[in-house]
Picture (spheres, one colour):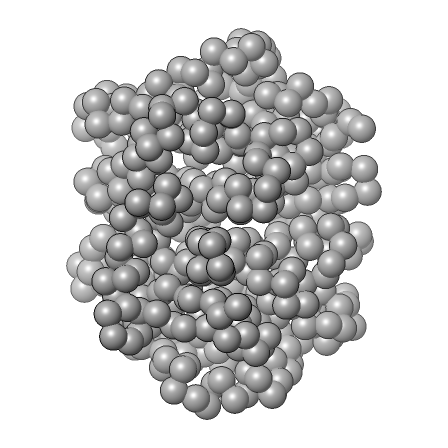
Length: 235
Length: 235
């Protein structure tokens, strides 16, 4: 079965967590909105004639199923491609971790959009500065400290043990994204999360991920995505 | 099996979506942190000796399982108490809707905390006013319009069809909460969501929910929770 991934073209965004899972699994997929009439196909899917229209991209078409919400897509893919434990307790645990990452991703987004997603960054620069300061003072240490503790407690390979899960792929993306958006702040912070930095490198070196990262399928970070580099927010 | 729910005492917060599901299912549970040494028991659970410490409340102890993240807990309870479809497609669909509600709940929270959860409301009043205006202009119509369309398309009973799911219980809470926090704005907005208002009433009239709402187990809305009434934000 060939999957169809629907996500905004031109950004990594939330679609990237799904792409990383598909790539690690070596699954066949079309990144629909990035070619031809893909954007209008995506918009039609959201108009709701199906009875189960997604609220927003990303969503994944898997045969007759249309699955929305990043963590929900990963729940589905994880079970099918060996990217999550098979037993219920393990399955719920890695899903729980992914939902915690989803919360963190929203907080990362809000560093440049504290007044909401419907206004431009340029209209909220001062509050963005304040929110970013709080983010690095309180939130990043809390979230990344939590994941650092989990990786260490598990012996340092992957967050749920010796086998890679979709959560590890997402943690790779978090480290890579924070490095792009806040190079100075992240450089200073990284000494507090050595296990996560190693996990990042371990994921980046996996053959399928390595091939993906150097391919054209990997969109470059840019200032329309979740992780945006604005010099004034990086001190 | 008697469940143990761990959540901050004194607020409905994210724990309320779990409480509503437990109550509708007539499941036996302790609301641990609300009595005796419950708070210190909760804090110990988060310290991580288990190997799978939750990042934050709410979390649910179900036998040996400890499940964190609201939507993850509902995924688990829904399957066990008939509060979600049994087939995979239906199970993924209602979970997807719950994750969309989770996103909306975070945006509701951010109306009074646009600069982040670690500062007081009193320190972010002006940005809170701006974010709240955007929230009512752009975000509430988008989210609630989406759910209104789903309920209507399904004949008007519940969001996924004729049987109640945990998503309906959460939508009840959203309507009730917005009425508490923004009575004037919500009064004006409700004519745009007649199906959701009816769904709210239908849930409130279900025997187990009705009994719960008039019991002491239902904590009153207040200004420490997600839905806060600040006059200046209700214009």
